[in-house]
Image (cartoon, rainbow, N blue to C red; front, top):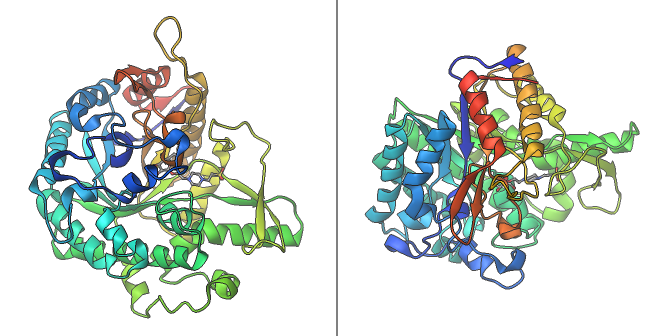
Length: 446
Ligand code: GBH
């Protein structure tokens, strides 16, 4: 048995494009994800977010379910193309949906936590070159400022960006996410502009003096371990860590990009002339909390052939339906490391969870014992960190609902609530009922 401190924020998380649907409603225009998912071969089965969980129409019944589970907080994201369907054109109907959602949450004593950008970039911004264009910082700032003006005070926690690594490296470097480019220089340019836009939004937030609310950023962090004790493999792990973690943590908390990575990337990238000397001061200004998304670790070995100088090797542990190794101890290592090397500001786990092959059994239920074990083990290590004095303030389970899992479409189920995509019926999985108990007792039993 392990108790969580009073006020520990147990929540769940989602994002706009993954659940809302209603892509043509109330003035919304397409995002780069509408375009990407409708491009042949980009998502599993050609799945798109056109309907998704139809949350746009069902948000009230979804809040009832959140209340039933008993979450203290709910993390959602705002669809930029609903707020600014065209360049410079604010759409009041777009913000109206989030006002209603926030009101509904507050009425039910659920703290709304809003992510400003969870990858659904308006296509008009994509047409300007997306995150490769430094002007995006201006457009993102305009968008953020509008959100703060409209609902800055009623939303107590703001997250500027969800996982800059995915929005840059995975999107412009690896090509798995929209807009599907495969160019490493582009990836780092996009990463820089995203980080810079984060800093600008924080500046605007401070200038607007939104006293009751807090602002931070969410990073997906993947601890890297060497495949052996050999020096070359240790070096590989150092680079893998630079690639996934330090490239984002260092600018935010130390005001610089890691030297070893600049050195490593130089040959492939060419000049880092897209980084201006004043940028790092903007990126590194103080934030109120750090959000981390944790799913797995990586194990790497040295490879001379790879531009990055490492390749991943398979870990020994059991895997989720995504093929990601289950490794809760690494969450603990990560938290300890953040505490020691980066920051003592409050940390929130803004995402953690797992996809498994869920089925509805004859009793009409979903017995997702594996998911319960996954969550329990991660909460156990989160709790250990807290017991040792770590400043961890909350945990948001990914995800509230089964939803559109990006390139994997609807083939992967992360929810603690099952969604039947034919009928839009929601069924609380066993994990939701278990989580309800955890929240209620503010403890886990193992
Ligand atoms: C998050 O991305 C997203 O924020 C969310 O929208 C999405 O639905 C959810 O997770 C589930 O995918 O190679 O084994 O070390 C997570 C993206 C997942 C990218 C883990 C890095 C490394 C896994 N990250 N991944 S592993």
